[in-house]
Image (cartoon, rainbow, N blue to C red):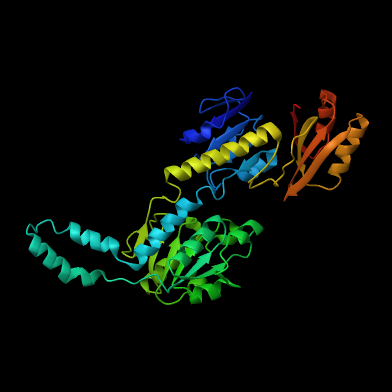
Length: 391
């Protein structure tokens, strides 16, 4: 029986993936093998000795101590793309609001509470509507920074609205490249993208390389009067530098999913309370994806969409399976196979991959692994943990 402790409100469709005959799941589960969470800030003390995996029902893992998990050989999963459509729709909403003063128009009409005559109401509306005149998106240029699951969907939607789309992503994956519409003009650097874009939307993870990606220097490359959208992470934008750009009208409007103390007094800053993935569909998609990844890992040792381990999948056929996590140092595979030979173990199939400081091995053998075999493997200094799967 595998134990999965849950945090936050995980969508029922996701929890239903855990069959009760094989899994015990819930917020009160003790000594879990895996954790499933959304926004809960995971503490080191919650990483018990038997923990093997943490799954975040969402793309970002800022609330998970990933480095500590890696040190202990704990796999950290996320769910890239599961909430992509939800974020895309919010970005497109922001684009429309940035080009048409819909919010101002609504507030104006709501303020006409003292007008009781229909004729007078229509007259006032007609005379004042010029105050809210906007621009069409068709024919305007959109710069998309980050062409992953969300960025590629935003690019496609913008093309469908008649926009010219420019894209930049130096680390685009093969899968993402296949999803990207051919009409997107790939830019060689951010400066070129900023210079040519009426609107810029950010879709990059928050890592050291992207911290304050939008700063005083990069803002100088923006087209005068551009609009900036940030539905990625708050730390991607240097808010102090942005405030200067807003004051100088270099940036005419900023739409963000991250309310800011620094920017809250600007009338041309529009913030939502982190609504990017706040749809029932996105929450269900993330929960199901996270649960499926945990189930496959706990039952078969396979790893998909981990932020700290390599992608490793090996089809189960026959025999017994070992999953071995070790520090990524030379000579480890030779040591593992030598121990197998010493115990007269025949290896049916195996796969070995690494990611930064961690290496992971799935090894199928034709006889049940003994306690002595597992103990021998654990004597190797660089081994972090060993798991045994039944046939």
